[in-house]
Structures are given as C-alpha cells and as structure tokens.
Image (cartoon, rainbow, N blue to C red; front, side, top):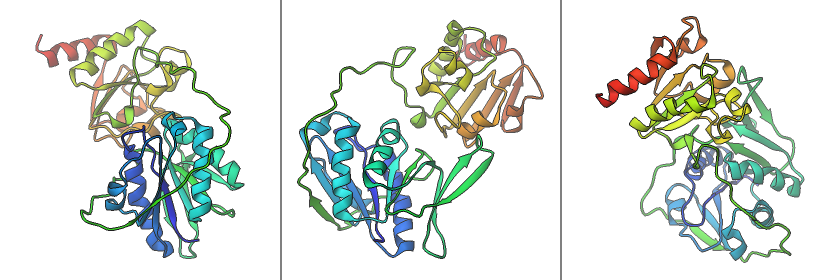
Length: 323
C-alpha cells in the first residue's frame, strides 16, 4: 500500500482541471513513497484515459454507469469505494470542489478512515508519513496533520498546485472496471441557479472584482458588475455580503469560500481581514479601493486607491471604457 490515487472529477464529457493539479502533486508523493500514481475515472459515459496517463498516471481505473451521468454523491461514493478497495492505495486525493467536498466525507465514512479537508499543501516526511497541510484559525496558522488510519484521504483546494505537464507518448495501464450499483436511493430533482443570475467559477477567472462592507445595498452590485464586465471578469464578495443574502455563496472569496489566483484582483470596499486575505492574497496583481487609508488590504495591494468606492469605481469604469 504505497500507491497514490487521484479521483478524476468530470462533468460527463470533460475532466475538471483540479484533477490535473492533483496528478502533478500525486506523482511527487508516489515517488517519495516508492509507489505508483493511479487515477479513478468514473462517469456516465466512457471517457478517454490517455491524458491522465500522459499527465503522470501509471494506471487508470475506468468505470462507467448510466447513473453516474448525474453528480449524485451516493452513486459516486458506492463506485469509488469499489475502485479503492480493488486498487488498495495508501493515499487518496479528491479536489475540494463543491462536489468533491460533498463526496469525500461519504467515501471516508464508507472506508472507516479519516479525512483531512481543504488542504493547501501535501508532503511525505522522512518516516514516509503522509503530511496534510491546511489553514486553521482563519488562515492564521498552518496545521500539519498526520493520519493514523489507512487509507489516508484528503481533499485539496483548487488552484493551489500547478497542473501536471503532458508527456506525449507516455505509456500506462487502463483497467476497465465493472461497476456494481445497488438500488437508487437518491434522485436529482432540480438544479438551482446561483443568486444574481448565473453560475460562476471564480477559481478560473483571470480578473475578479470583489465587494465588501463598503457596499451599502444589494442593488449597488451593479457598480461592481459593470467594472468586471469591462475585463470579462467575475464578481466576488466578502463573507458578510454573502451571509446577508446579497449574492450567492459561489461568489465568496476567503478562507471559508473560494481561493482565487487571478491575474488581477480588484477589492472594492474590502478592509482585508485575514479570512478574506486567505482566499486572494496570491493573486498576481491586487488593486485595493478603500476609504480608510489604514485598511489592512493596502498592506497586500500592488496599487491602492484611497476613496469612496461610489466615486472611484464608476470613474474608473468610465476611464477604462473611454467615456
């Protein structure tokens, strides 16, 4: 039991990029353990396994079942546990996506093993222990966790590791697994849209324009959306605005929300508490707009504008649009 397994999350026709990030880190861990890197590719229709191999997997366990066409955790738990029991890995990595965060604890419970959630670092120490690193106390410290159970299961945040590169022509083994699913106990009834109209994936955004407590009312998000639209960017928010119901939780940036690494992050009326900084401080460029010159956000900003966002944001948008 020295292999590392990556759950290759997919939406039925495309593998989620977090899977490629896990393959890169997983290969490093497997080499330190002296084992192999494997992947579990489970979906409603048969997907090609070649890219998983070219990105580092030595072996891919591929399984298909009609019920896997919908992202229902109970179905995926059942078949992923089957694959894990067949492959017998020491370490299992699952992306900390919405689906992964819901699936992983179910898998851990079925395997009677531990789970470390939302990891931002992974390592193997000198004694071959799997070390899981995650922020604690609102990101003020990093906890280093070693599990005593086996297998060891961890979810890993998206956009914390680089994607594994492609080695064209790399050879590996594809094992087509015959999946066994019991009676269906869950049915997807309806897919609800996020607040403010559409689904958003902040982690993939090149530009994020985010609002905080400086925003006085929900309708004023139009100022933020207008600026974001110039860059074809996404709208983010600090936790208080999400808790107040002004915008959906998918837009929340921070320790308990999304971790983003865009090329440009524009913080509008955000003071810069540690909870929020944990989710955006690794952005390539941070632009802060705040009326308080002593706001902590300015300590992390590449560019700072001291002023009322209700004056600065519309003027900035006009200048960018050449109006």
